[in-house]
Length: 405
View 1 (cartoon, rainbow, N blue to C red):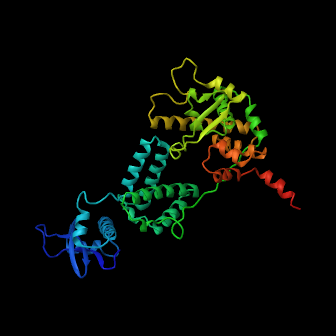
View 2 (view 1 turned 135 degrees about the vertical axis):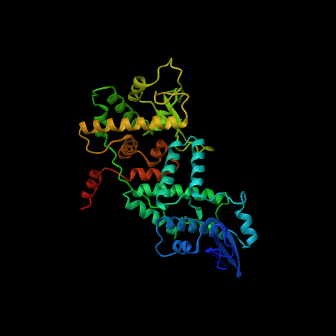
View 3 (view 1 turned 90 degrees about the vertical axis):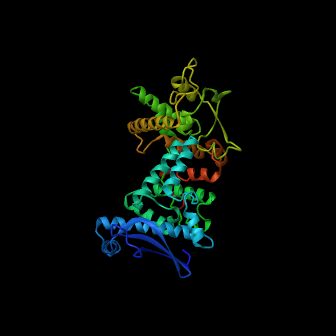
């Protein structure tokens, strides 16, 4: 806060009210001149001393917390005024003259925007981030100016003590950073207050060990004799993802009948279609014999009026319904493909995500270039592909280690 402006919580004893209480106010002093700004509280002298004392009881403690928050709001307004004056302060605080600074409201606005862009799943991560912030701060409001390096460091430690992974911390903090960036762009907060980056708060990056399957393990899944229809469906969808350039299951769900063009699947990745709108990355996947057979078994019939290739989504679903349907389908497939993998002797956790990593890793081990794999995966930059390929099987690392001596 500006060094020539100070704030304090005071009991205004200049005029006693008819109920014998005195109003509690925020006193702002600038160049030795003070002005008083009302709060919603009025107390006796004795109760005010208890509220501001060392160990207030529970009801007084709550009043003290609210007053401190009110003082902090005043400090935030003062901090954002270039050249302080009481006139500028009053004008900024008037209704309509103050931009929304509450983090929870800004998160709500972000979630609404994401939902409008049909990014429902991403919006859910922002919602869980907002919930975590509310639990951490124990406050009904959180001015964005309180998001400092210290606040973020404390938030990270709070998350870790509650057994949240580094990956989860990273996701939540990237969401906070995105909201902060929006606030800067909207003129709500100044760039000088930006708490992220070098020599400030650096968002932790989780590095999970991705266990891609070997080709022989993939063949075990392909040749598995299913005991029922749901097992057969789960096996086929996993194999389809693997053969279709490690296609993300959301993209499989969104495939249209007209995505098949001259023996190829042609589509844009749902994940990157917004960020590459001016130059969308079109992915072409050759439809192999196995993929064709899977399509014949599980696709919507030719006489069906539904535009989707597979009966996962239906026309008329809103974005929320689509996200729910995809999430339920992934859970079901992951459950059954996990059981299948175990029954054929694969001792690794196998999910729909494993299919994507297995596709890239098997290609790399077969001699394909990183550039080709990157194009096949639909990555925007090759560094993302290299990250995928960093996690070969442990036995491969052991084999090459033995050649060193």
